[in-house]
Every structure is written in structure tokens, then in C-alpha cells.
Length: 280
Image (cartoon, rainbow, N blue to C red; front, side, top):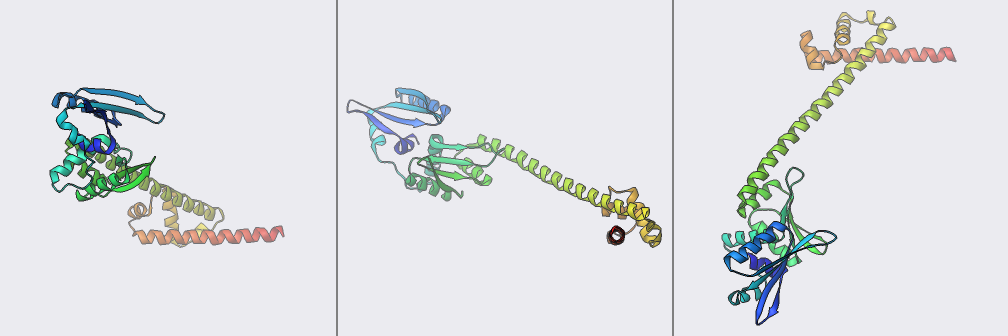
């Protein structure tokens, strides 16, 4: 994995007397892990340096290579998708440690690989597609960025790379986010319905008050007068609740309220016409 990542972003230093692999990493914990592994596994002398630029921190590693490992770091990087599933997993794991990142899902779903070239971006995207993960490629700051924005795809990819703890943490946050989103959607829906119901009830109550003030309410049929009495007493109830209280169907309540509103509207229009004639 280290050789694959080095082949895409690093270079060899030194001469025939001693060669070193030199490359940069974007995250401190990954850089420290590479140094520990180099010292523990291959007994390589490792130098580590953190450099702060205007945009970000970069971490540079220099590993003194044993003679037998120099050829492995001298070959051009292999960009073809490996045939064996285990090789694809190892390659993805190494690339993700070197140039990958994933957002916490409480904000948005986003996993990416910042590849050094377009050809490396296409190779990474091909490996993701072969693992059943839909990926896109864009360019940022002169570098190819392979990204995944689908939550299920990110979980599948993390599982493929063996990041089981990350999968559990990702799924836990994702479940909370989805439940919270559903609660908010329901709350917004209910709030909108309540506002609509109260608005309709108040408008109907105002129309009834206007009819009574002009002496028109008493001239309505008994069914409409009863409806007016119920609506004045319960302006906050929706049609279904009002129908249950009155032991009527919802359509019957709706029809009677519409008739009352029509009478009030027509009466209001007549009153305005009379006032206009008086003023003329």
C-alpha cells in the first residue's frame, strides 16, 4: 500500500550509497502511523516534518530504504485495477490513508480521494465502480478529486477497506440524522397544517361575525345557523375534528362552511356597493 501511494505522490532521494523515499501526507495521524510502521516492520530510519502553508498543514516523510526495497519504490506506479478482490482492497486502503477523507455524516455525505493526476483519478474511480460504488471525478486546485456522495456507497466502501469501526460510527450518526430529518419534516408538515386550519377557522369566524352584525345570520337555514354556532365556538378545529364533534361527515361540514363564506362574501360585496352609491 505504501509503495502504491509513494508511486503516485512521492520521489526517491539520494544516490547509490543510500536511497530514501520522500513523500507528503495530509493528516498528522496517518503520517505518524507510517513512521511507526517503517521503524517497526522494516527497521527503516524515518524522518518526519510538519509544514504549515497558507491553506493547510502538510506532513513530509523521509524513509531510508533498505537496498532490497529500492526497486519496489523505483518502478512506475501501477494504475490498472487489480484483478483479485484482496488486492483491490489493499490498494484502496493505502490510497485512502494517503489521500482520502470522509466527512462526518451529520452535515453531509462526502468521501473523496485527492489524486495527483487525472489518470490516477480514473484508476481510483474504476476501482470504486468495480466495488459497486458510484463515484464522480472533478478537479480542485489542479488535482483530480474522486468523490462519493451516496451514504450507502460510502458505507460499502468503508466496509470494503476494512474500516469496520468507522462504518459503525458512520451508521450511528446517519441513523440519528435520518430520524431527526423525518421528525423535522413531520413537524413542519403539522405546523403548516395547523397554521392553515387556524387561518381558515378565523376567516370563517370573522365572516360569521359580519353576518350577525348585519342581521343576516338569523335569515340563514337552520343547518347553516347550527354550523355557524359550532365554528364560532371552535375556530381552531380542522374539518375532521369539527365533523366528529357535530356527528357529520367531513364533506357536509365543508359544504356548509363554504355556503356561509359565500353568503358573507356576497353580502360584503352588496354592502360595499351601497356605500359607494351613498358617497357618490
